[in-house]
Image 1 (cartoon, rainbow, N blue to C red):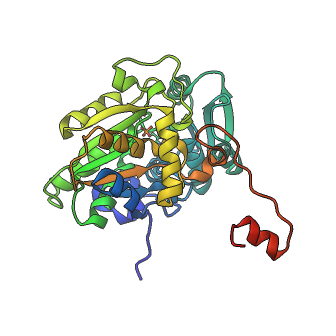
Image 2 (cartoon, rainbow, N blue to C red):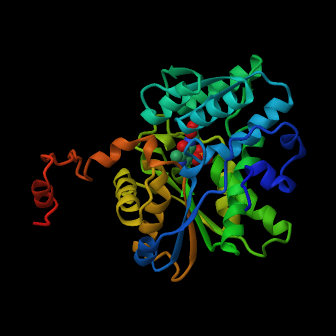
Image 3 (cartoon, helix red, strand yellow):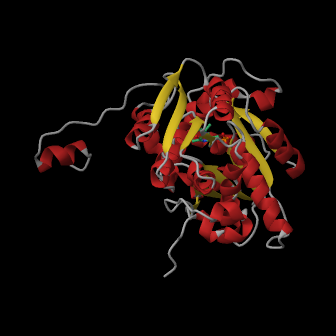
Length: 355
Ligand code: F0G
């Protein structure tokens, strides 16, 4: 049987040599591509989900963290730092532990999901809640890495993008072809940059002969690329993508323009409706931000903008257990509580509507 060896060993020929010298891996990548029948019915397309919550720390960030941390280890780094809305910090903390390095993370005060906070602390990171938003954290982290002996492992680190691009390779390797459309959430814009790089490299290498259209979706209250200006106070319930000044802004626009794609906004209501639909009608539990891609595809389908029978891959970026509280309320905001019953079969059958 083939045993998955992590994205560096699986895709070494497409990665820079220095990341394969001192490999730090937790077995990331090799995530499922799930046929989403309900989404196909609703859109008239053939829709697949790339389920990135199945990575070791529960988000797509692990793909870029194995390469960034391996490069840092190769250079002899002892400490890493990142700014994060939560998932990057969870991933950095885990991979720093695997590498025997210390890890500092800067997160926006009170605006990261409990699961992610728990992960960073569990893995022994020094976590600072910064009075400011993600963008303020990233400015501080960059300055810190310029001045002090710590390596920056945010996606502005080019080694991050190298690892993350392997998701595009996996999509092609699994489908046996290039999707017509690749949809995903956009926050700091590293992931859309990485997918586009991966698809282009497979084409340049002659593995494929086509490219997908890249469809990126931002939360409306944090949609600087859509609006064409930075947001000083980004706001959305999708805290993972609550970002007002994406570091890879230019690269995201390039991916959109060169692919003939779009970057559009979805509202928090649309995100939560898609989040619910993914769990209740597809069977895939994601965190709210991760549903932005599906929300966008559904919105475009309603507007008649999804070509019939198009092959669409939507990346769902992070696991639902990162931020599970959203499953415990209705779309109207009411609390959903389990029904209590006594431990006899008749009451249980009655409660289940069987009797
Ligand atoms: N989805 C999730 C679950 C994320 O955590 C992020 C980014 C994105 C989508 C957007 O990806 O930034 O590459 O455009 N999270 C970063 C973090 C910012 O700190 O964990 P992007």
